Length: 82
Image (cartoon, rainbow, N blue to C red; front, side, top):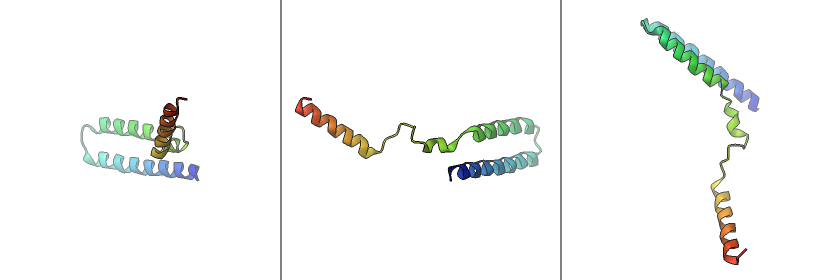
């Protein structure tokens, strides 16, 4: 399921890239080369980013309730002198 979502994200990114590229080309500006290079750089960064990495549970965030429970345990231990 995750792999399918990763490829869906990359497909959406590719479609966005092509749409933005067409818009830049339609501008007919002398700055097209600069804009196309910036677009390509952003696309490369986007494709190389693994969005599912935030789902692997290694990002260090804790649910608020877990933090509260840990604080309560520490408070109880300090009250009891342990």
